[in-house]
Image 1 (cartoon, helix red, strand yellow):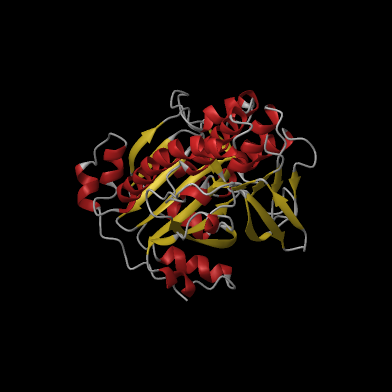
Image 2: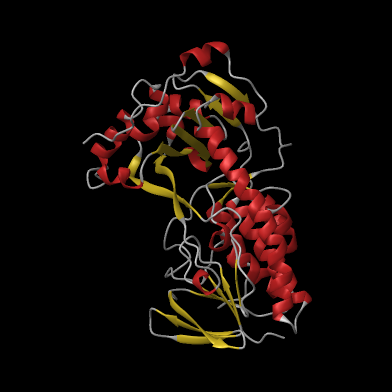
Length: 392
């Protein structure tokens, strides 16, 4: 049996891998750069799909714990015109198969399921060097070093492990999202809370949009989406949060106040997130003793699949290692082949979602994606996206 397994990255995929290995009596160490579990925000809501994310949680023996954190009503979906007119309103009747949960709560379930000491916090990987025979030497920012028999890169978009198997690097996908939060919205901004509804909101035009989701405790978590060059966001002066929010809201001039208040009245400082993706169908030749999972393996545009794929990667890799305890290369080969196939399919789907949301026919293309039609009056009212240049 492989005597030492290192998982770099304590995201959902890496933790789920460690959990499945633990269930099979196989020890692993998770190395995480963050100083502690709560060192930074873990993001918003996740829709966990029956065919991948829920399968992974069942393999980890955590399905019941997962159901205890479901945000009831979170599967509701609304599509609004820029003037606030409702184009689609699908309630959450519990039959969608994609229940919403807070990412932080799901991560906490995974962390609590592992033996004490499994995660080594404050361990930022700076180098991984092949030693031969599938073993690798790991060097960390604090000066510590470790030699391991099996190395798994679960370390996200800018993986330090990926160069061991692939020269691919994420490329800018042509979109920048700006993240905002509006807290206590039901009391402070009831019109915005009503516009978002109980789950997800999409208000879109070609190349531009506002996407939002209701989180527990009356929080509205929004993303302003802009199809712009990579350096476009450099003009946003985040040192002046109020001015930045006004400038961003101005890019949606003429939109309903219930929508623009999601940024204009947002709490704190907006967060700029440039969207990157690995080449569609990214794969590599088998390299002894090392593999990748999650965004490290198949980063793609946001489409609701990333966390689900990462967890299924972790579950299937753990099961493959358990099935081939004396042959890690057979385990990695058995894991990688189906992972490559599903990742390629998901990447194509992510591109289709991006086009449906922000292509030339938006919002009609998104309604068609949901199996609905754009009302004639809304089609006549739709206007090309503005230049979307932040003011100030």
